Image (tube, rainbow, N blue to C red; front, side, top):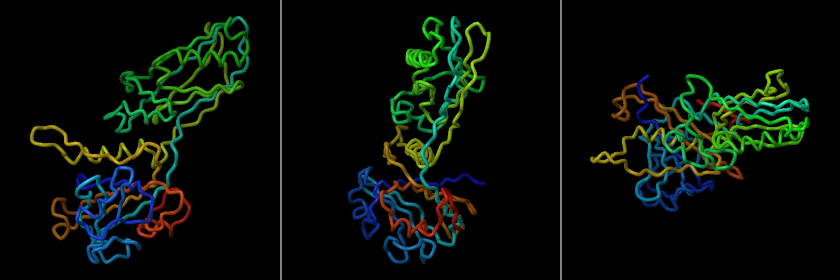
Length: 335
């Protein structure tokens, strides 16, 4: 398939039912267009008004529009309704970080305990590459930046944490106390993992999305392995801040927003830390030359709309994209 050179990302942070403005003139639609109040509407060129009813039933052609803090809004090309081949809706789902819960029992008296931690993968989301200092990428709330560890394709990065026999005193709860302390004392490891001491168990959890690790608990003299752990796998979820900001920036990286001195032009992003989003994905086909001329014939492009999850239903958005007519599944297609 040809490159999707017209794919776009829109973010609606305003959860009201208001589709602001009656004209696509860069002034009325831009009212209250601060990042936290961004609006998304579907402009019907046939009626010169924003849709409040089903998009797929409109006469069209249609244009997806999002407010900017000033000036003209972001807008898609004019899209013939017949060219829309897929509308996919994905509900918000919180990210589940990789977690290992230890339940090893009381260690043997007189034996030091070694905890081997192997970091298998690092974060690979776009934001982690372009702005790794973003504190919101630490989903534990600690604000830690994922450290540079090297090339994970060549193997795992290993850490050892040791608790002396005189420290754990053959008591499981005391052993966990010292493991927590040792991890916190290791600046690199502490930036990667958070711990929760439950007295009878110990949770070790990745701070950042996409980080996966292994834990092996043995006696330091290699005389045996302390068994007892359960694992919760990483699940990216959908509509989380780190995903939305990554999608925004990755998409706009293709726009070529540079001036003639090769200095990047500042383009605002609209993903807001703490906000959660549901996702509407619209795929449409170009029928060149009758359609937009800058895309190649038969090219499929994607518009992804992130709509902030509302306390109450957003009836306008539900009606326009048909969300209210779908079931309760987390992800559904509408053609």
